[in-house]
Amino acid sequence: MTLDSLDARLLLLLTDAPRLGVLECARRLGVARGTVQARLDRLTAAGVLTGFPPELDLAEMGYGLTAFAVLEIAQGHRAEVAAALAAIDEVCEVHATTGQGDLFVRLVARSNDDLQRVIDEVVGVAGVRRTATSIALSTPVPPRVRPLLERIAQE
Image 1: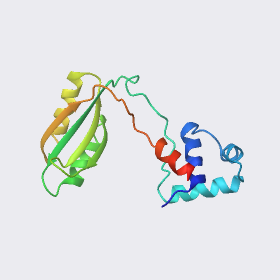
Image 2: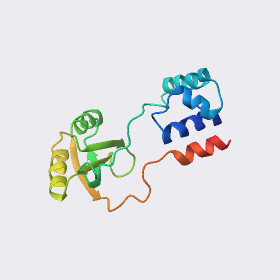
Image 3: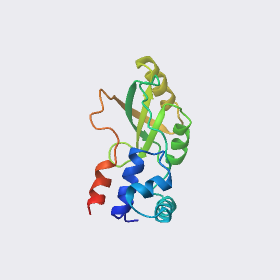
Image 4: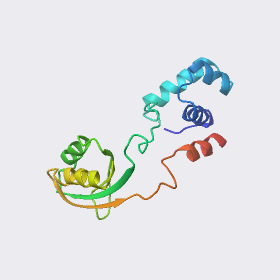
């Protein structure tokens, strides 16, 4: 799906204020309420807009340590390994990748000792052959989509 300028401006508005209602979005964008609702419905149906989760600070929730693990897995077991990883609460994301590893995993922990416990759980998943883990020291560029939306909004 290709986004147009109005789509991008609507998504930017909801990125900044996810609790805005359709009527307020329409007012701020200078379009009809029905237009905003139709755009939201279309973006949702296309899978572009997947929800409005709150933005959480994991460190403030007690999970101040972020790590990334590259996993090598047994061939043909990606789905099973991914399902088992999803059952580990501290696993935040899993990406199937090319290159030396098969899966790239972002996980969080409360401390180094807790990270060891999480890694032990990951290594214990049937099908995981080897892991290489790196601890994030800082996050100079957090996850973002704003620059892409701003570019599209200018088109």
